[in-house]
Image (cartoon, rainbow, N blue to C red):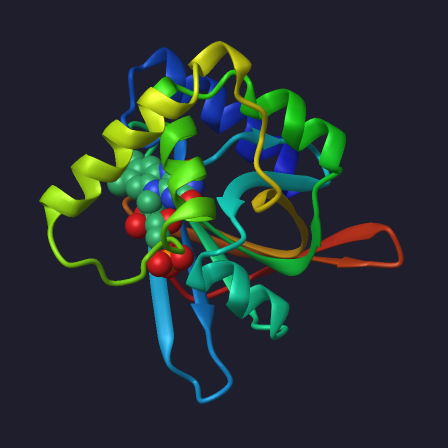
Length: 195
Ligand SMILES: Cc1cc2nc3c(=O)[nH]c(=O)nc-3n(C[C@H](O)[C@H](O)[C@H](O)COP(=O)(O)O)c2cc1C
């Protein structure tokens, strides 16, 4: 009955089938004026309770979370023909986990995180790509990758699901299966929706 268990199983199957969406997700946020924004993110972990994402706290999406923006996380497993839409609450990820996981990031991502800290926030405007390349070059000369530590603004979040909607297109009778799962007092309940 826990829809997150279904997602974990579908994701494992999607990975086996080489589904290019198996490791990503799409995070939509609305600001206080109702302006929507959506972006692709790597889905770091999913458990029977939450989804873990990594982001930089200089970014607009983090600012939106700070303002209490509502979110919806969308998963689409092409190989399974199944879509999930997840809503709920969020909380920052434990700092120690962020620091340890950061060490496994690719070199380029590490230098970018240093750049957000030392030059300009993520998603801010820059003069040119050349300026960006020069700054990365400067960082590479200043810091050996093996000595680098997670900067203060590297962050992670746990999205704690309390509503999950599933749409399954993969039905023999061709009638799509759409269900909404809601968590109340620790119990998931299901209702059926018109697809
Ligand atoms: C496949 C893919 C994976 C991505 N993964 C992440 C990620 O894990 N974390 C992240 O901050 N941005 C990731 N991005 C970049 C975001 O989509 C986005 O451009 C960036 O985070 C800035 O978002 P914002 O301006 O809305 O804060 C990814 C983009 C793609 C295409």
